[in-house]
Length: 550
Image (tube, rainbow, N blue to C red; front, top):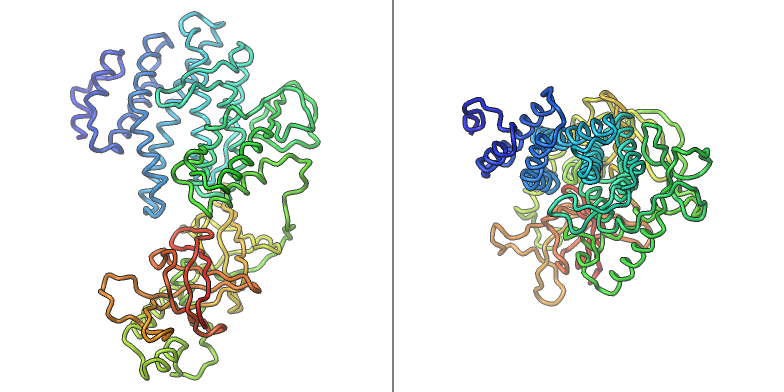
């Protein structure tokens, strides 16, 4: 395939005829390798010292349009494979980002030449389309950097602002154009610019990439609700942006008056979200409301609430519930459900006489008079998982609040850290473990990360889930007639906060209305039915359940 890419050494981006033939002959079987080659050619195109004439513009636009589907396929592959290895994730991200960067860099070059030459007639009629494409390109660059929690440098923001000011100056900011053939409708430069500014607050390290992508999709569907004004109205405007500075949007408050300021109203978007919530209550399918096919209930309600909270106007009050207090210290950290269950089970056993039976073993003895093989194997697996976690991560604390704790990590600390990852943390000199979720990841620079952990409601207690089958009324027995590939029992975490109960379990254990015998040290054994999923993350689900019998 590489030989096919480089045969004859010719430059395929010479003219419209050569690029059309080259794109037509690109192998379709390996989108990743093909897109890497497209990026290489775009780099050569941008480095070439040639004019910004109409012929070169036609080459660029054809190449962009013809390879856009391949780019979309790679983006989908990235977003739907959260468990890919770090190396594969990095390579895929770099290729996707490089494509957006080189295409946008090329469009930006044509537009800067257009401005420098007083709007010369070579591309004047194409200016609205080129500006909209360049604005979308910078929007994609910023979004994909949000996926990796990277800081957006000043130059990217300044170029984005400058493009919008060009559209304003030449009076086409509100002129809709069909940016790409696959777009559902024409979009204006103002809509593309406003969408990027309203997505920026969600790049603060608190959402997973698929959630950021979902919010971006909502903004694109509801772009007609975005209002961008040059005069401030305290009753309507939520955000402002200074187009003379290299930064994104800020919440309105005590900003100075300046001709470079633009103001964003979210009133229309909040009204749209209220309509969506009402429609969901009456059973309307999420996809028909513009929420995408990937939107899932009931956990999707949490994302809607998060978006509404972010878009509320300043008059709605302070959105921060808990004040962060500076605090230092070292904390031990373990991650993933199996390791956490194993560690908490091990901690819970301390103080018990050596060789005394565990709660699971006692349950077997009461039911059968002996410990079954399935229980022995499960306990052995837990011990192995605990052994793998002997070397726990040690994190430096940064601050704390009532709802969680913040850490400062070095470049080599916690390569596994992602928003939504399940963790248990304990002060370094203690064995007081508390379960939480990674809720925020911010890259300060190449060497330093800030990570926030949000406590889960309720104390996490290790619990055993045994598949239930009925025999003689409500007698609980382990179904040892299951075939080897049937869903086995397993460990989970029982979360209880007063009368509010839920379970953290592996996704393979879940099916609505599935029955288990739940055994936890603080609650004994109960027969339960699983109900709906409250929230989910990588390798875990948080589910509600109802008790059938004790």
